Image (cartoon, rainbow, N blue to C red; front, side, top):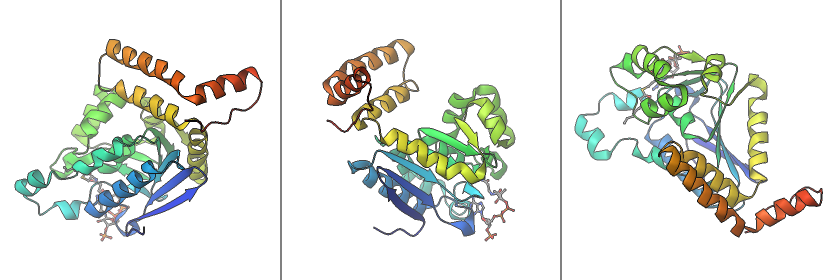
Length: 257
Ligand code: CO8
């Protein structure tokens, strides 16, 4: 399938989805949303894909939702179309995802990065929720996910003043897992994705599900959920393979369902 605003490439068990609207710094319009969701859901259904990397350009991961597209909309347009609700489906993918962020990740761009499971940043990355400067607020989960990621103090300041964070501050605050030089970002993201894709696919899905559950529930319920999943991995052949390979001092070969 070909798309107008994204590029999709596959390499071994990983897939790379690149936002490709350079003229608008990858601003997220409806077409981008529909294409990213369609492409990633197709990849999610593909048993040969074990991890998906989402990236933009060196200048911009995404400079936010498309302001020009939103500007004339009425309340009824937004409410009745449930504007941007499809982005939730990206967060619901079962295949692990990696955001490789270089340059601007503002507004919806920051929210898009936070919808991914692992967030790697280049040293040029800039994060923020500057919607307030446009007279609006975050609308793809930014007020919730940023607060969970960096805490109330910083999230409140970013959402109320529109101030942005550079990569070093984002790493200190816990928003990103690592910062790498811009020239190495994609290779590093694909390497991380390759590592994840080399694990047992069902077990990686369970690990992802368990970590994500921590955002939704109490500690006691989350630990209980984790324990039930932990018990469940003993029904996956890859558990035998992983532990047998350790005992036999060899590299495990996963892929047993
Ligand atoms: N939307 C539309 N077009 C954009 C956007 C955007 N978010 N960002 C940049 N562009 C366009 C510019 O208009 C410009 O186009 P043109 O050449 O036709 O004028 C082109 O991209 C290049 O941009 P600049 O010339 O502005 O480049 P600079 O290097 O001077 O500045 C910035 C880069 C600082 C990133 C600047 O472009 C900027 O401030 N962009 C807007 C950032 C922003 O406010 N993002 C938040 C948007 S609102 C949002 O994301 C809400 C999400 C929730 C919605 C949910 C609804 C339910």
